[in-house]
Image 1: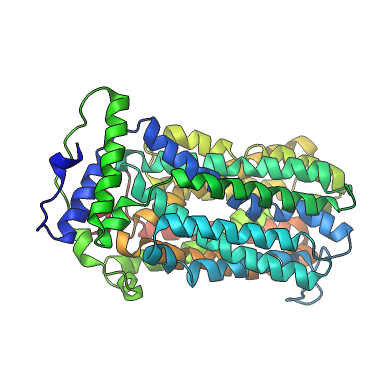
Image 2: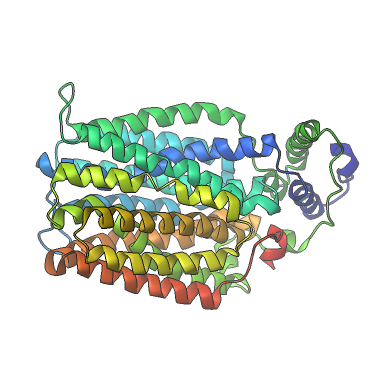
Length: 473
């Protein structure tokens, strides 16, 4: 199959890359294609486990005397806010300063080594006994997680056919967000009690770090991105990978593959892989839009996810009951992306982002004024569902808006602003919680969601069902 569509030896790199993209986009979504998505999603599982256990172990860190629930001074280093900020400071460095690594060295290599990096950092963090040591190693783990997040988005968008890009990201997020109830349930069982001489929160950290090493091992089944290889001039390697994919997909179908569409050379010739490429039309408007979006979306997403146990305690609920409620709410985390497996490529992604931001805003304000257990859990579940539908939508969306040559670099840059925002929003939320209680926190979140709705609704292009190369120009 590969030889029928292979470019001649004198064909230039741009045409070869365009042909590779056309061949990938026409592949039917068989078991082989979904297997690649699931393997990448397993990496995302441990990435999200590491990212989102923060809120669930926070009560244990406070109980153990390592941190305090509130912060002395706006940027105090001994509160839960400093622990959250250390993570997001690392994420900011990983996404903004290191996002180019996947564009330079390849998706597969960076996916592998960044996962190993943050696993080791977490093992060391689990044995820290001071706020300084805790925050330092949380910062270092955050760098690895940040690089991983950028790489997985670029990797998936380039491997899968255009007709299932939305569902592929929904699958990634569905598998990934299963980490949330997993982490919440482990925290519920372990955080209140020591085990084998170690505090429960340390076990929550260690379990995720050790399991992630298994994903590092199974990464051997993942091929490099053929689109990236072709852009590097490594056309023979790209041909070999695409040919093998085509052979497996055709065997699963039982009949010949459809012919690829006409190659689109526009993306292959416009972007050269430089930082400056983000600031020329049409990418400049997209970059500005996504920077603003990411600054404000993280207030809603992590403002709830990282603070829900603490917010419940602030409402007068005990630590054990708070962790139980948080576990119930967390069960909904993978449900939003599972819904996406059915709707992701049917609903325009910018529309999904706007609608889900509105749901977070409305349900958050209701949560702030409720004291009934059933209502708190119900509204918490609705916020979680909306947050995670918005999450898979915007991860797919921002990866689609830039060309292959700068995809990881550009996504890393715009996404890094969400990490930068989270550094400061965690301190702001801590201050608002102290001064105005839970209602004040959700008014702050609602304002951020309104900005999200406006910027995506007014500035965002449509992307569903379009080839990456066509979206690029």
